[in-house]
Amino acid sequence: MIDSEGFRANVGIVLSNDAGQVFWAKRTGQDGWQFPQGGIKANETAESAMYRELREEVGLLPKHVEIIGCTNDWLKYWLPEKFIRHNSMPLCIGQKQIWYLLKLVADETNIDLSYSKKPEFDHWEWIEYWSPASKVIEFKRNVYEQALNEFAPFLFP
Image (tube, rainbow, N blue to C red; front, side, top):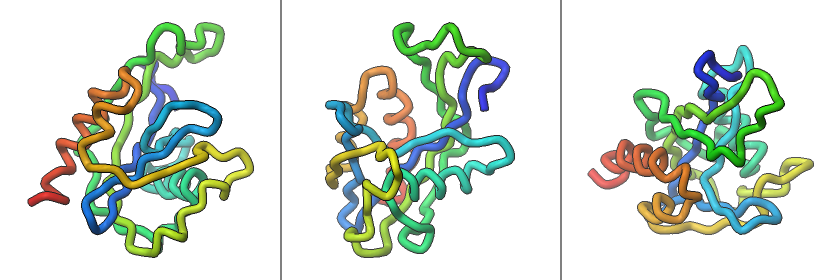
């Protein structure tokens, strides 16, 4: 779903463990690492999209996680010009995202990157909470910083 301003509605997922680390995944066949994320389909709530993406990308079910929080508003990023598909309509210039902070409440052996027919990720690891903001591709950094700042009080009161 792309809004009238050209932003695709999307969810982002920060999955944490008991040690306050976060799930960090490498995109299949690429060098880029990121948090799980994905589009919100028509007639789908942000929360149901989050659970669908969690299953598709990480192999986890709702029973494997607990929702700790979500962002109060949409967080937006603009795509660099080289990533904009000018021949597709409506034109998408970026993404607006509702982010969720989840805690893994099941054993990490439930994580299955190969659950999907076309896996999004081929490797994952737990990393220090603040690391993703400086490691993610540059055009997503501001959104990552905003989400992590908003969620930090939940994990580090």
